[in-house]
Image 1 (cartoon, rainbow, N blue to C red):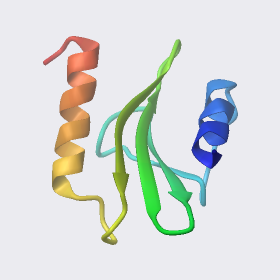
Image 2 (cartoon, rainbow, N blue to C red):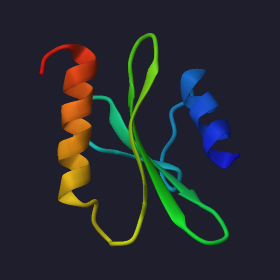
Image 3 (spheres, one colour):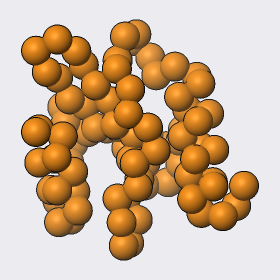
Length: 86
């Protein structure tokens, strides 16, 4: 429920910052990581803010301090496919 609310705020043009969202320039321009906690897990949603859409590149459970390298690679690949550049 929190994820939907926060993504809706982003859709409406409200910039989010810590602790809810942080920039992810390593993935690409306008990319961010939404940070969600529930009773049992911490979740991350990697998203990009486009002019006409919020593009979700990955959703994963946070288990380590850093974002796993394979998640970064997958996000870049998926966004490239979405953009038609890969």
